[in-house]
Length: 168
Figure 1 (cartoon, helix red, strand yellow):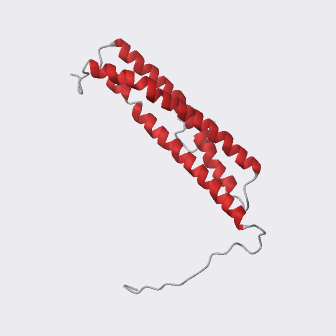
Figure 2: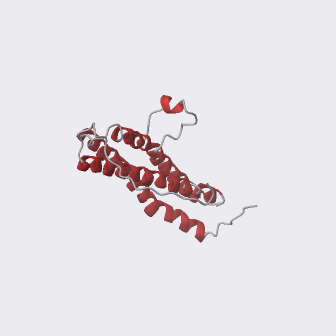
Figure 3: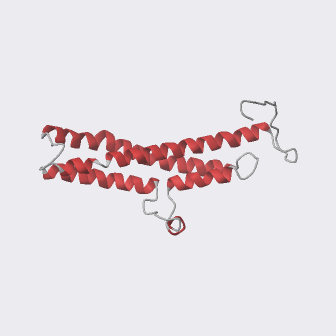
């Protein structure tokens, strides 16, 4: 109690009833970490995409129809990418059952498959991760293309016309 502390050494050992090697457990852990990292990258991309989509607010301050059209086209591209990465229509718990799962949910569900047993993941699990990872990478590449090619043009147009921060 109070300022008293106790320490004890201990060793974590695998369940003796299981016939599983440390290499198999390491493989399970490694795949779980890879899935976690891909989910994190997906969610970072979604957050970045949503930040960039705010350019439509800036474009709305412009008097140039071409700038508004460019911004609308970018937002449409961003919406299409986001809809592949995450279920944008999900508002309630029931929506997760009613609406189709998107890439981030599929990856998250893969974690429970990996953790279902103290064993090396199956080849099907590795294959599923590879397929989902490739699909995410495709969307991330599409997002990067929009960021590299489309967004700078609108930003330059807004800067050139000195779009005001506040339009009265």
